[in-house]
Length: 387
Ligand SMILES: *Cc1c(COP(=O)(O)O)cnc(C)c1O
Image (cartoon, rainbow, N blue to C red; front, side):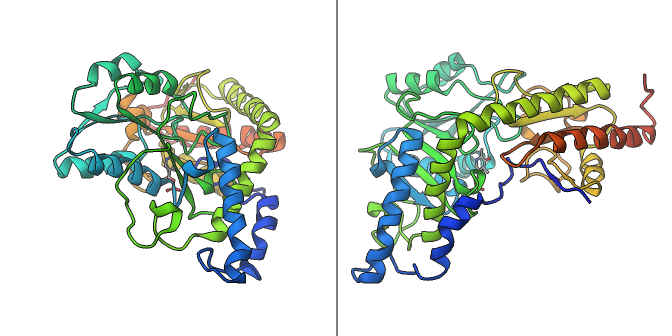
């Protein structure tokens, strides 16, 4: 059976060049980077090299890169780190209703600990209005957290405006930039980002490695306490193979992005147009233009996305219904609900996210299979009348 993977926003395969680069860390390069002897000295430069590659990619300084275990940890470190360190300056955080659970559930936890969190609404495209951010600022506000690109819809947030507004008000700005990395250019200075979260497995590196970009001079509370790794900012022996691979992946993405992003965008547009001409009652979720090149989120009327997902999986096509974290639970996506989409329309939402291995033939195959699966499911629906 043909296998087509259209779930790159959930995770990506390891890039062959990255795998090749990381191989020695499964074999001869095994030292602890903190060790003074030859085994430690052999591996230490790889960590510095990875730090340089990542800093290059996001236009930060290498000293501002803190390695973590995942994107979720980086979100936790940023938000809890500021909340605890700046307790005497205020207890108010501003975020949006469409953030990843790594941000939303961290904020919910802090609310239980006495912090006050404002969850801003978004428009029908999933975009927060910078004016709403401005109006929500109080003298107790210590942090604004707004994601760069939404993982479910691909919609981009106006983070440059929000970041500059945060800085004018002397408030720290955190952005979950996990989905933006490798897909669109990032400049933490131009975007006024103080704290940025990134994840390796979304950019063709292995799972289990993340980064917190932490602007120079910031004094946050630590999340993980222990040894002096990462200049005392994140304890625990470094995930050497993950870090080396993440660095290599950034180098490769940096090199490939200018060519890959437009190619992937063309395929996404071909997929969208193909679906719109072949299937009726389909709605695009998210902004038509202001979005990631690779992400498509569509609601199909009169079908349940879970059934659609299963039908496509039987034909070898991997997609996602809502976010990966909420699949398995039939609740409609919090992101789509926040965009004002009716719950029954949310229930028919499918996310297709493309990546570097996606080909034109893959899209042709999906365009052949999808109308058939949708048609079959609709023929069983008592509500669908057809056209
Ligand atoms: C995947 C993802 C995360 C979490 O990253 P992990 O490394 O899987 O913990 C956070 N935010 C967004 C937007 C994501 O897509």
